[in-house]
Image (tube, rainbow, N blue to C red; front, side, top):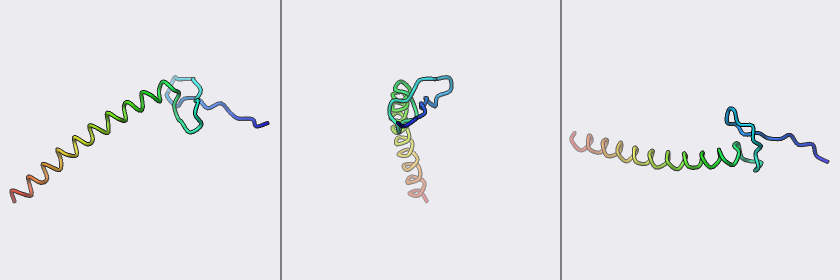
Length: 62
């Protein structure tokens, strides 16, 4: 028999166990993390488009 240690969620104050071995968070915080990641990806993409446009505009003027 294998003695395995219970893995707990990495969010401070959360004492729930992790259901998937490769995960860092419990189910609730895993969903919140995925939603945050999707929002961050969209905002980073938008910001990069604005920065590239600004750089192209500066090079075009010189």
